[in-house]
Length: 93
Image (tube, rainbow, N blue to C red; front, side, top):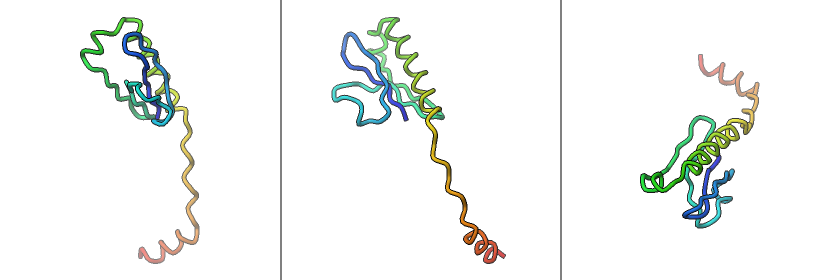
């Protein structure tokens, strides 16, 4: 999971964090991105007060966060235990 956050009220500086613990206190999280989706949280008042440059910068950070989340490799599932498979086949009949 990747978080897009900003510090500052008037002049927002957008950054990406890999975990909630990395987001500084007082910062506002604008998007949460996973491999499957991105959830953005921009209120109407915030949207109206953003400059075009800030909005495009936010969108670029969201795209970057989604690509980072997609590139993050998930651990491979453990190989099935052959003994457990054999016992499962015996008792499933």
